[in-house]
Structure formats: C-alpha cells, structure tokens
Amino acid sequence: MPKLGMEPIRKEALVKATIVEIGRVGSLDVTVSQIAKRAGMSSALAHHYFGSKEDIFLAAMRHILTLYGAEVRGALSVAEGPEGRIRAILRASFSPGNFRREAVSAWLNFWVLAQSVPEAKRLLAVYQGRLRSNLTAGLRPLAGVRAPAIAASLGAMIDGLYLREVLKSGPPDGAAAAELALRHLEAELLRGTENAG
Amino acid sequence: MPKLGMEPIRKEALVKATIVEIGRVGSLDVTVSQIAKRAGMSSALAHHYFGSKEDIFLAAMRHILTLYGAEVRGALSVAEGPEGRIRAILRASFSPGNFRREAVSAWLNFWVLAQSVPEAKRLLAVYQGRLRSNLTAGLRPLAGVRAPAIAASLGAMIDGLYLREVLKSGPPDGAAAAELALRHLEAELLRGTENAG
DNA sequence: AAGTTTATTGACTCGTCAATCAACAAAAAC
DNA sequence: GTTTTTGTTGATTGACGAGTCAATAAACTT
Picture 1 (cartoon, rainbow over the protein chains, first blue to last red):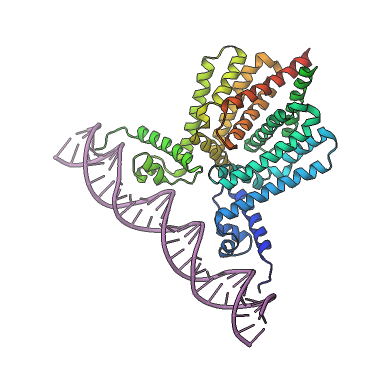
Picture 2 (cartoon, rainbow over the protein chains, first blue to last red):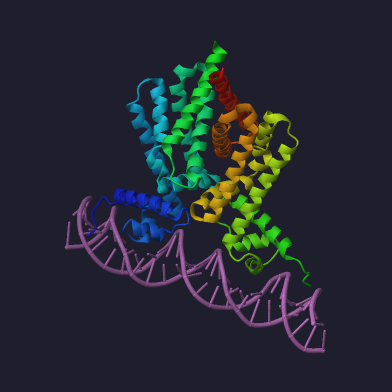
C-alpha cells in the first residue's frame, strides 16, 4: 500500500538510522542492510533513495551539522550581550547532545571521512567557518581587532577540549569543558587589556 | 630459503606498511593483502605473525605512539630551562613528521578505533597521560600549583590546534600552531602573575 | 639421519556486502 | 481504463576479504 510522498520520510529515517548505527558500532563499518533494517525498510529501498552508501553518510553528516547549527542558533537567539553570545556558543558546543555516543562517533568518523571524501571536507570547512564567524562577531565588542585571532584560538580550544572529553575514560563532562574554554578566553582578554592599557 | 629470526623483521615491515597504507587510503579500510603486499610478503604470513588484522592495527598504533614519544624525549633532552622544555614539547608535537599524511590518518583513525577497541583506548590514555605529565613537570617552576590546570588546558590546546591544522585545506603549518599554543600559555601565565601579585 | 622448529605461500573456505533487477502494487494522470 | 509514476522488496550478482590449511623448504637439534 504505497502512500505517496514517501521520499523525504524515508530519507530522514535512513539518516537517523545511519547515525544511530554509526554510534552503535563506533565506526563507519555499518552495512546498508543494518541501516535499512533499523529504518524499517529493505536495503534495496535505501539504495533507491540514496544512490550509494557514501551518499547516505554524507546526508547523515549534513544532518549532524544541521543539528549543531540549530543548537548554536537557538542558544544565540536568547543570549544577551557579547559575553552572553560567547557563552551561548560554548553551551551549544558542549551540550549533552554532542556527547551522546552517536554524536561522538559521527564527529570522529566525519573527521576521518574528510580525509578521503572532498564533500565531507567541504562540509567540515563550512562548520568551522560558521563557528569562527560566530565567535569573531561575539568577540568584536570585547576584543576589537584582536577578535579574529582570539576566535581562532578559542575555536581550536573548543575542538581540543571536546576531543579530550570524548576520548577520556568515564562520563564526559561538558560543563567542565565549557568552563575551561571560558577560562582560556578570560586569559586571552586579560592580556588584551594589559597590552591596551 | 628461510633465514631464521625473521619474526621481528617481518613484523616491523608489516607495521610500517600498515601505516603507509592507512595514510594512502585515509581510513582503516585497508586489506591485509594490501599491507602484506607493500611489506613484500604474502597475506598468509601477515596472519601468521600477527593473529588478526586488529592486532596489526594495534601494533601500528603502538609504533606511532613510540615514534611520537621518542620525538618528545629527543627534544626534551636538548632543552634548557622550564620554558625550553615546554617549547620542546610543542616543537615535537607540531613537528613536520606529525603532519605527514600517514601520521595524520593514523591519529584520526586511532581516535575512531579507541571508540570500539579498549586496547586502543588504553594506548591513547597512555599517550595523553605522558603528555600531561611532561607539561606539568615543565610548568611547575613557571606556574607552581597552577601547573596541572594549565597543563590540562595546554594539552587540549595542542590537540585542538593539531586537529584544525590537519582538517583545514592547504598545507598544514606546524610552526604557526606551535606559536598559537605558546601564546595561549603566555596568556595563562600572565593571569597567574596578576593573581599572585 | 631423523625429527623438530621456523619460514613461507598458493589455494581454498566461508562469509559478507554494495549494488542491481525483475516483479508487484497502488496511486495519479490522461 | 490504460498508461505512467512512485513505492517496495526478494532474489541475485559479482566482487572482495579475513582467516585457515596443507604443503614445501631450510635451518637447527639430538
């Protein structure tokens, strides 16, 4: 009993199933059949809607990036003042959702994927560019011309803290990571005032 | 004409070939046959010396970690003074060797591997522990009781800068990354003196 | 010299998996 | 009401790959 307009529904189900499976296995070694089964359809249908396995992965990556982007935008929309905006970005970056097994596996594997799949690399560049842009905008009133430089180092700090938190044994602590990032920012701003004064 | 004592030679050749292949492909999707071929032997022999493909990967990971450790030790051995020791660690961490394709792929994939293979996770923890310990020791004379905290953030900064440098388009610039890490350190130390004074 | 250990590989097994295809079903268009 | 479009799957193909094994050969032991 084929209902019409299934395509977007099926695609979304496949994307979500892909992320879950990657999280379950911890790598990209997931079969199209596994994904399709979790999404409640045959593997043939997965191939029908997405042309290939790689296309499924890329769609999943876009979805993860979209989720993250939405989280940042949501946090920014209720933030007040420059420091509030920076805090909002940190809160979004270190939110519990980003530490769920699926998200962690997704990010780590997308970094690997970016090594060999140009489109994956492009997507990651888009994400990094947006993060840098958001940080720079938030920092401008606080750091003036030094905003871009501080945004760059803060961006690296965010990635590094995330990686640490994710690789360490035991439950990740996003709040602690955000705290450390803020301390880094404070230190950088402090040097700015010293140089300026 | 089987010469005796081939085992260590074969194993080393396999480990190096594994790293090269991972670098070439950009992922762990390398076959034992590919590795064995590059190492100049049959795949059966690879299975003979290492029990399984996973064992080969873990040996390769140990090798990468050993290389990195040796680089750090070498740089430390000629370093003078606390700041010199920190600089040495940064120089080793951002050395050109760590930005070679093989090393990059190795690190990224080992992070992924650590998600599902406990031994891989353990090895990464050893590496992180050593880095933290080295940084803390070097920072002690500069930062006193704040040394451990600064070491933690500097460690995250190192990983984050490495990741950025590795994921960005264009040739990586280890020197620039080391420079940013040093600036971060300066900022942290500056705050320390302010609080102390 | 007979037996054991080490080195080595080609051939093989057994499984898996991405991708394709033929076929079927229902809705829409004409 | 027939044709076309959309949805769907079971079955199949074709390839590949990890791991095993029997067989061969050289060294070392006794």
